Image 1 (tube, one colour):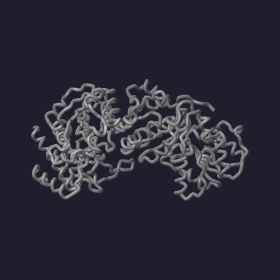
Image 2 (image 1 turned 45 degrees about the vertical axis):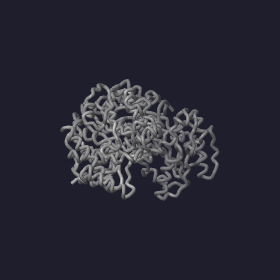
Image 3 (image 1 turned 180 degrees about the vertical axis):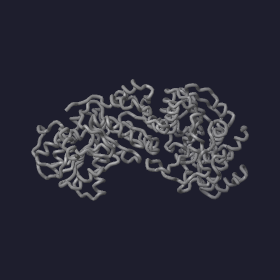
Image 4 (image 1 turned 120 degrees about the vertical axis):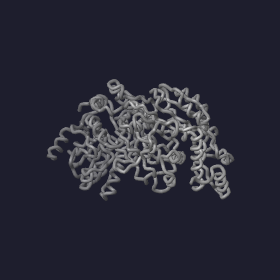
Amino acid sequence: MDNEDVKKIANNIRRRVLEFTIRNGGGYLSQACSSAEILATLYTKLMNIGPSIAPKIPPEFSGVPSRYNKKYFSGYGYNGPKEPHLDRFFLSPVHYALVLYATLVETGRMLPEGLEMFNKDGGTVEMIGADHSPGHELMSGSLGQTLSQVLGIAMARKRKGEVGKNWVVMSDGEFMLGQTWEAIETLSFYNIDTVNVIIDANGQSADGKIDTVNQIEPLRERLESFGAVAVEIDGHNIQQIVDAAKIPHEKKPLFIVARTVPYQCIEILKKRAPKFHYIRITNEQEREELENFLRERFGGENA
Amino acid sequence: MKLEARVHEKNLVKWAADKPEVVVFSADLTNSTEIGLFKETYPDRFYSFGMTEQNMMSAAGGMAREGFTPFVHTFAVFMYRRALDQIEMSIAYPNLKVRIFGFLPGITTPGGASHQAINDIGVLRTVPNMTILETADATEVESVLDVAQSVDGPVYVRQLRGQIPRLFKEPMKLGKSRILSKGNDVVLLTSGIMTEEALKVTQVLRRSGVSIEHLHISTHKPFGDDAILDAIEKVKYGVITMENHTIFGGLGSSVAELMAEKALGKRLVRIGLKDTYAHGGSKEYLMKYYGLDAMSLVKAVENLLGQKLDIDEDHLEEPQIDQVEQIIKAEDL
């Protein structure tokens, strides 16, 4: 697939998330703006994964995991089967769930009808992705735990002689967390080179701009000093994402700091600065504005 | 009574010999949690995480997802306190087979409040999918491995280290209390090191005419087998619980919940830490200072009976377990 087609997928992801944001009176829209190219590139060009083995329309919620729940369903199957030679995918900031669901639709892994179940009671297509949500495998809503869980998975896969890579999408806000750095020092200690992380460095967290909340920069230098191979790129440039993923990182984990913009391609959000974490539609004028933008930029709702 | 040294250390190595799926995780307390010999014997199955307990817990979840069984070792406080969110979301929620070995229960360490796990059972009892076991002697320290490994889900083991007595001959069984004596004046439920402490005085009490049904508890969750219910149902004066833990959330609370739900309207006296942290000191000193010792049990019995028993510290004796177990065995036959 050429980069122009990936770009189209990225913009279709944005369009779908914008639709749902308008419909629901709010949503994690800026995360779609910032991460659309990252997810689109991962699913179309970077990850060596098989076709979905999950139902095209996600099942109803069938209970949380327990030794008594025989009907338990995991959402990992949308990323293909677990095979020794295949890659695995893990989304860490799972409030990006809608962006991932839209990606699954745009890459033919889930039907648009599945997206209609978004945030509906009794469903699995939840607002904050859980282990049973399409494309998800871990419980990641408490930020900062995914990288350590993937560390454990990568260690186990190494024990089993598996060669598939383990891809993680993280947000830069997660680099405020001590556990993230504990995981990186341990990845480094065990020379684990099967973990590739792409950081959606949109500079935003719930309270606003990260640099008004805490200090995580310089991120690339910090990552390098913790023993990772780290590279900084424009996270909206598909070729840069592809090239960054090819950087050799023998015996070290790879971290791609993808600098992104929280209103990329939906520029009318820019005036909401510094608050982008959750786009809330509070009046009719805001709704109309977004509807007009959806029509003019993306040609209205998807068919 | 003979004490045995570093029982877990030797036993784990022997037990894990034919279990390649078992891996051991350490958080910079390898010798303090008796896994040094495991590290030497099976270096390939030993993972050092350093002091990254949160990271270690999540990684244990990750590894369990891939079919291995991490046996995570460190001091209990650094797991259920420092890494509770990770235990919950990375291990308990997905119901993964991780065995969490928490050392230094209650006042078994002179390390003070930072090192003493006084509310681990209470905290972890509220965690769905979690099974909770506690060991009291060398036999339980050994047999708890099979019990833990039989559970399809996460298990927390309140484990003992160092010099420990061998009280029991029979291995621990999941969800089964041990009947150490039969009686109908008072039901006494003890767990962990409190069983040994109670045994210093239960025979003395019996000789003073108090009929005691003494049950030893090693499964805190799931809790409540028939032996417990039967004993409480028929008891005359009331129930005493004795735990190396705060009286909130642990054994005393489990028994109170059970009695309330089964409408067993009997008195209950809970021996344990009375909503307080402890401080650093020897086990013997701390047990006496915080009212966890055998003489506190005498006072509790006196309280239930409404009479003085004329027992003092000079009357205390070595735990007499062999004789007791034989009596029960004969009854079983």
